[in-house]
Image (cartoon, rainbow, N blue to C red):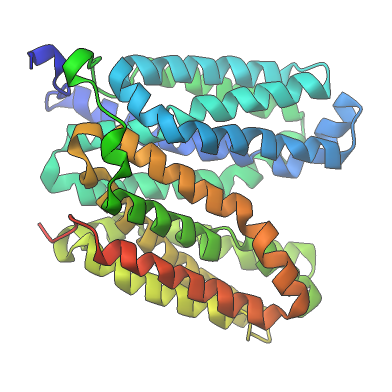
Amino acid sequence: MTARTLPERTPAGRGSRVAVSAVYVGALLGPLGGGTVAPMLPEIGGSLHASSGAVAISMTAYFVPFAITQLVSGTLGERWGRRRTVRTAYLVYAAGSLICAFAPTLGVFLAARAVLGTANAFTGPLLVAGLADMVGKERISRSVGVISSYMAAGQSFAPLVGGLAAAHTWRLAFVVVAGVAALLSLVPPPGEPRPGAAAPRFRPLFRRDVGMLAGGAFFSYLGASALPFLVALYLHDRLDASPGLTGVALIGFGVAGLVLGSVWGTLCGRYGARACGIVAAVATGGFVAFVGTTGSVAVLALCWTAAGAAASMLVVALQDLTVRAVPGNRGGTLSAVSAFRFTGAALAPVIWLPIYHSGPSLVFAIAGASVLLAVPALVNSRSGEPG
């Protein structure tokens, strides 16, 4: 194996700090671009002469290609080189955002959203993989926690950014995102092409422990992170909460992940991601189940925030284990596991809504119990011991 095929290390100093910071901002960009349209649906519909329901398909147009492409994007990106792949993906993301900003019809807008989702599938996993090489083995856990905080920030603030943009012109949000993506393309993560015998293979991704991590990621989102819509319904139907009060009650879940990500990363490094993840899965399941028994908005908000704190710890633990599972193909492992994570998010409404209509308390109990199915993935992980 030649020096050219080895993961490229960034030298210590100012340059490495800039590169690491760029990785964190890049992790924020994907969730921000994906969720920013939610509060702008009426304005987009008015401009494109379409109903809000029709424009809402843009969420599906983004996340379906995003999830499917991640099954292969990480491995392909490792083969092509993280640096080149991420730079190209950023430029495609910038171009797609500009097309969204100036789209004359709904069809063009939806096609551009699909391009954004596909491009994002080539950034997120490779950014985490590149970060692991930049910070070194001893700092992986904390860095995974920090990057998880940035991802949570993107999810939490996407509605706010979209709402502020819509107050002026919704197109501005996409122009800003395009500009940020173009700037990030100047500071891609390290990693040169790995051709021939050095090329990462898909076969290690079919190992039992990787499959268990994928299952754990699936249930962590299906039973917790993908439930805001269900909590919103409960607030409206059972607690008679206004839309504004519902928003306040829901925001704590994401904010908890934003604030505590680096803390959870440090704990995973000290006590082991496996042990921390098991504790987090049990706590998350319990808090989610308790949401369905609450009788006031205040108690629900506290419980849902606690669920968010525990769920963020579970996500950090699973990410920590995943980034270590296949050192020769970190990007491929991260992208494949992430595909299952977002599949869980996509299936949540289909699975939980029929049960909700049969019994709101029952659905939260079942959803909480489903999070416990992540425990076998944590128990069977080959990595994740402290240190």
